[in-house]
Image: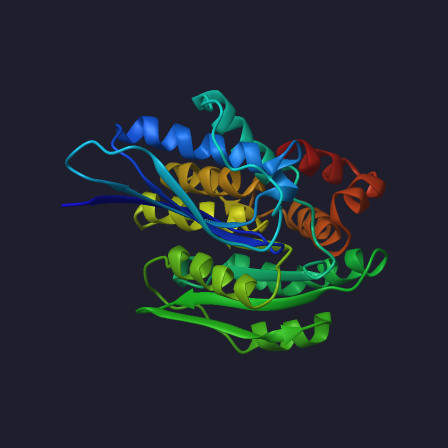
Amino acid sequence: MLRTWQSSAHNQTSNFTIEVQVALKPRTIADWVLSAIFQNGGKNLADNLACLTVSIFVPEREDSIAMKKTEISRQSKSDLSARSQSSRSEISEFLQQAKQFTPVSSAARGRLIFALDATMSRQPTWDMACALQGEMFSAAASVGNLSVQLVYFRGHAESRASRWVNNAESLRGLMGKIDCQGGLTQIASVLLHAKRETEKKPLAALVYVGDSMEENIDELCSLAGELGLRGVKAFMFHDGREKQAETAFREIARLTGGAYLPFDGNSATDLKALLAAVATYAAGGRKALEAAGTATARALLADMR
């Protein structure tokens, strides 16, 4: 009987598949295959790693290592033979580089999902966000266009996404039609929706505003990791200090290279400045945020990896 391990990673530039048949321990296999990836990737790993699927088959009896490259559209001249093993520290460094240095692409620039918890406890912050969302468009106007999609959940398993809008009046109109209803959080549905949207067209950022988390944190982290590999940064706005939510929000932000942004529900000024800074990043990238020069922009840059 064969046992199988599979792993994948994605970006927008190329695509290849590797099959490996070995008779080694799983940890050794993982190091060996990732070593081959490093050999192919060159120095700029974030640019050269593409859409990759690795399938590893381990037979019961020992066989020699056989490696077959079945499809490749880029780096065709690269040698995929593994001349040395990658250490765990090298693999960790690679993952950090892939997240940290992935820029906001021109296709993604200006596309932002604005997601809010619309359960009953959120009505005060919903009203505040509705009043302040125009700041996102105002801040983005100086560096580029901003296109926003409203996503919210409430009640019993209700989760909805609006059309894409490009001005504050349209977004305010959408938000004004929604009232908060009691129910549990559905953050996983928000992350899954963001993943699907970025599969259609690149996405610059996800803004989430909420105060609690009532879901499986491992599931949320898995979805967040997939968003991070696609270059989508999550900016997790946390109203209050609920510990379970803080733990989850911080981890989602870390896995995507975004930021955890706690704020006081009574402080409209803080939320206004934070929304403006995130919108500046979504519209113009890190350079635009650096050029903004505000204290909030500097703090956000420090939080982002």
